[in-house]
Amino acid sequence: MRWTGNIRFLLLAPAVIWVLAFTVFPLGYSLYLAFYKIEQKVEVKREKQPMLDAAGKPMLDDSGQPRTKNVVIKDQVNSATFIGLDNFKRLFGDPQVKEAIRVTLLFVLIAVPLELVFGFLLAVLCNQHIFGRPVLRAVMILPIFATPLAVGYTFFTIFYEVGGPLAWTGIPFLSNPNGALASVILVDIWQWTPFCFLVFLAALQGVPEELYEAARVDGASPWDMLKEVMLPLLIPTIVLVLLLRMAEALKLFDIPFAMTGGGPGVATQPFSLLAFRTGLRFFDLGYASAMAYALLIVVMVVITLFFRRLRVSYG
Amino acid sequence: MADRIPGSKRGWGEVIASLIAITVALIFAFPIYWAFSQSLRNPIDTYTVAGLGVPWINFTPTLNNWIDQLGTPETVQALYNSTVIAISAALLALALGTPAAYAIARFRFERWKNRDITVWFLSQRVLPPVATVIPFYLTMRYLGLLDTKFALVLINATFVLPYVVVILRQTFLDLPVELEEAALIDGAGHWGAFWRIALPLAAPSMAAAGLIIFAFTWNEFLFAVSIGSNTAITVPVHIAGAIDTRGVQFWFMGVRAMTAIIPPVIIALIAQRYIVRGLTLGAVRG
Image (cartoon, rainbow over all chains, first blue to last red; front, side):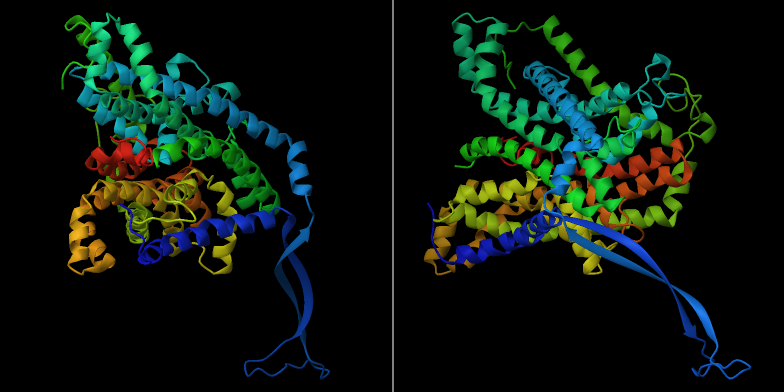
């Protein structure tokens, strides 16, 4: 049942125009910036200006000449010079970029699979009649919706190495580069395992009872049940969750911003944080736009994989 | 619900599974509990509290931090800003997204097929925000809208719009089309069928979508910290400011973290039924 009245365009237009205006336009503008070197300088000039009296007339000195004063004029000058692909070339030689890519990749490749595995195991565990399930389900909603920035600061106090609740372990949670990256990964696992868990649990509960029955009649052990019934049925959901998590993980920003500030040094500075700082803290806007585009291209690759999958779901 | 794995033994296996589930729940609840525990401590107790920091057992709790923090004009301002921005962005996104969702669910588009349009909306969600933050910053500076709530409403409405489109598209698909057809036969027209029949039926879903996107806007940080600096600071930006200006005051940090976390979490618990669908952009039914 699909109507074709022309009102469909009227209903759709506001949202489409809105998205074009607020994402496609900025993306185009950003691409333009990526080819320029943008500098914000304050130019200081000194000028002699005649002094005026209260009535607005030039004041004269004893010899009858107009009196002057030295005035300092500060002008903010924004200059944009076209430099072609130089910003993109600069990306390849920049050690900070290299480090940010390493951090982002390690983060995505370690945190996301662990979240999926823990989430899946928990979901399988809770897919039976146990008294802990309602409690766990309710608690698991907390991390997903807890403000990431507040989470980052809370974990900062938990990982605090002098007098924090985990100080007795002697683990350098924040002061050691590898420890700090592990801590960021740990917080992400805390925040997003629940998401994987809830989605997998929902998918498992959608599996018809008869399939389990049939498998049991065939004499399947719980392990066979997991491997032969649950896992194959959940593959589409697993792929979906994997791609959603990867797309989100590539955007990592809030947690390291709050918990480590990207440090020690730049050991936990992901790509988003580097681009943000380059653009909006050091105002190297052209270079930052090139960085943002590089990230965009990587995400596009993920999205393309993701949409093949999604188009099936929205058919 | 019945035993979902008929092969598994009842009894000890179930008890152990339940115990694991509860242990996991405790681990996942701990950080939020810790922030709360910290918010109740006198500064002198911050680093010296033993064990799990249970109020009354490990230390004498105080409400002074809460009274102090909630009494400062900056906190009140941040809470007010965040509430206004999140409500406005949610309403704006619902107003823009609901008709679009209805169009995709009920009408046929030819050149770009319906699912292409849906996927196009979704792609906005997967976009890295850092790619748009710089041009958005420059545009807002050009328009003189830096540090205004208005700018943050515009950008947040854009980012949550895909959720509205995708969640409500599914809602409209689930509604029986016969009611709208009857209205069309009675001469109501497509707009009448949408406005008077479909929209009231979709109201619960709209409310749930509104709550979820309120929470997302409330939690948003990158744009908030880029656009707002003085007057338009939101709750997360307010938290971030605490560490720069005064060093780490764990007791105040606890209060601020709790004030940030409580509203979106309560909202999520209210809209629990819709969360899985919302977070998977409609692909998995919760």
